Image 1: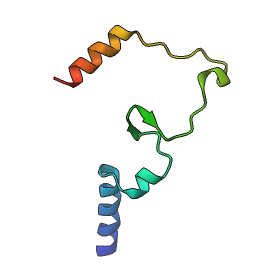
Image 2: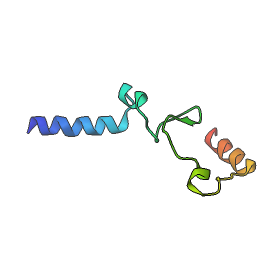
Image 3: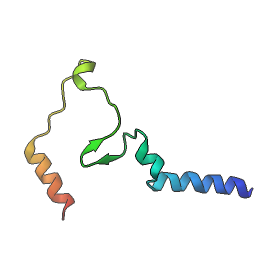
Image 4: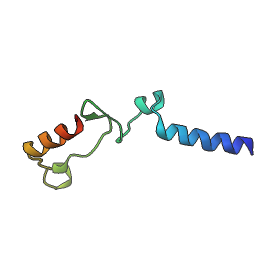
Length: 67
């Protein structure tokens, strides 16, 4: 029972903390300096149009984050 609780606690802590394993491996959820270390296909390679975000929208979003 104790080992089960330890395993559950480890899974929980791994999910809420950043450790060396998370930083070393490819992780699409980890973005540092607006860059992800995950290898993602480009939209053009998939036959899709690239995503376009207006500068005004980016500015408003960043302004809200810094308040």
